[in-house]
Each structure stands twice: as structure tokens, then as C-alpha cells.
Image 1 (cartoon, helix red, strand yellow):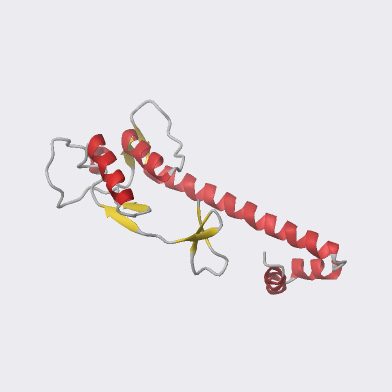
Image 2 (cartoon, rainbow, N blue to C red):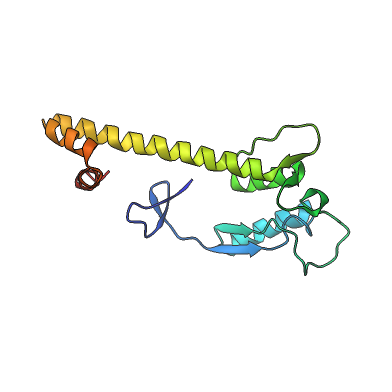
Length: 166
């Protein structure tokens, strides 16, 4: 998973600097067969790309094909997306999307809200872990007064987090 570095200057992957070299695939979900998609991904990998940016919206200037595939139900890009299109997004991004099987569609807005909620929960957990680590380190140095002050003063807490590289 990609993360933003502590100094907010670079992306990190597995703790190492990640150079984002992307190609943009404008019509990934509307104008390409599975075989063409496999070839596209293979070719971009050989060319050195490590990221693919994908537009999920239908292209107004897309070439006509025999696929006649629109990722959104009733051409409404704000709400319901075909399950097949969602599964492609899920597979490419390695991000689980909760989809109730049955009617062949899902509400994109609800899915985005769930992903945001999940991201917030991960952020909360990471924040709690940082504070717990800070408390442990301060306790080991018998700095109980700093623990209390950090709990009361957000600026001081940030100063201590920097001091301990957390």
C-alpha cells in the first residue's frame, strides 16, 4: 500500500520511496476487451510504468466499439455502477468494495462513503498507535509530567512526536 512520508514530500511503498510513474487509461471500462486489457497492462509494465491512472467515467470522445459497455446504470455516473465495472476497479486497485450480489448494480456513492469511513478508521488506529508509542517511550524515561502535558496541549504533543520520530 502507498503511504505519504512523514515529511509529506514523497510517496512510500513498503517503507521505501516510491516514484509514481503513471500512464492514464481513459477508456479502460468502455472500449477494451479482456485480451486487450491484459496486453495493455503487460506493455505498460515492460515500458517501465508502475502505476495506471484510470478514468471510470464514460468518454464523450471515445471510439465506437462493439462492446457497448457503460459502467453506470442509466448513464447516471453519480449513483449506480454495474457490478462488473466495480469488480474491475476492485481488482486493479486491490481495494475491497462491499457489493451486495443480486441485482447486478451497486450504489457508487455508498461505496465511496464506506471507503472513506474505512480510511478514517485506519487513520484513527495509526494515530492511536503513535500516541501509545509516545506514552510508552515517555514512561520508560520517567517523563510522566510530559504525558499529562501532551494530553492537554496538542502543540506540545506534536513536538514530542517529532522528538521521538513518531
